[in-house]
Amino acid sequence: ACDIIERRSTAGAGEGGEGSAAEYYVHYVGLNRRLDEWVAADRIVHDTSGAGVRDGAELGGRRATRKMKRRIDDMNALQAGASHDEALEKEHEESTKVKNIQTVEIGRFEVDTWYFSPFPDEYAQQRKLYICEFTLKYMKRRSTYLAHCERERSRQPPGQLIYRCDAPPLRRECLAAGMEQPKQLSVFEINGSDSKVYCQCLCLLAKLFLDHKTLYYDVEPFLFYIITEVDSDGAHMVGYFSKEKVPSLAEGGGEYNLACILTLPCYQRRGYGKLMIAFSYELSRRESKMGTPERPISDLGLVSYRSYWVYALLEILHKHRGSISVQELSERTAFRTDDIVKTLQAFNLIRYFGGQHSILVTPKTLEQHYTNAKPNWIIDSTKLRWTPYHERPKR
Image (cartoon, rainbow, N blue to C red; front, side, top):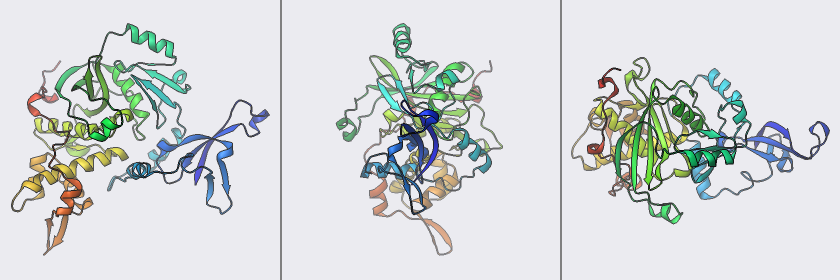
């Protein structure tokens, strides 16, 4: 079933928009909003059973494959215990119901967008935008974009290079899908106060793929960490995360180590989400404090976090002999204790027995969620050149 959000006339429609030459913007009930799309009128079938309007073609004309079902399951992952302000949530959904920009061309990729983003009006009306992958400037016309690329000399993000390492080998399935093996990975730190326009452009780009992101222009309180693949043509952004320079004590107890995270769709399923999460915790360890992401976490962000948390915990539990407490796990990982408990509960790794909670790891759990192979998101702390913000000289 689907809900019709909006109707628009297309070329050839009759006076007043009557006739079959019309399109409908639909939301598939029970699925994530990133699957919302414009469909032709002849695909709309009214369901006489009262269950609502149904799309005549299954999932946008495609039969759901096993991979698509897994993707849908990931999309619908719920964040346990997250509290939402229902009024603000409803207002946000109403104002961003219809996706404005359909595709973006960035670098060598053309990417379908997922959500509404508040670009300036003259750009928001475009079906496609062209974005420079190094400066993130956005343009309406391909000719303007190509001219910009010819003039632009920068081949990396602005800011300070704080980490560089050899790129880990891509998984076999990634290489089989035609993905190129990068030579190096680099991480750049960008101060929102120093590169305000770049960071605002970054936030507008990110909003095309993040449903709950609400801050686009207030970038000065944040540090942005850009993950790049490096080759002979430059440092190509694959994703980013941000964190507050001075985390609020009132919210999160000053332990928020990540405000927003995004891997561009063209680089997803390569482990970059977990690499950025691991990097955020490495920064927390440098700050000598616990870390946790700001809430709410996006659906795909939650999937990456749970996968990272359970692997890191199982790595310790697999090697540990004897009993170990949640507090000890927290001290060794820099994870907050409530994140540890919720992860253990989500994966049935904690049992209540004999009047107390005990951590229990079965061979089946290890087989499902842990492997002795080195994951590609291990951070080499010896290559990190970074000073906590509160220890830097005041400017």
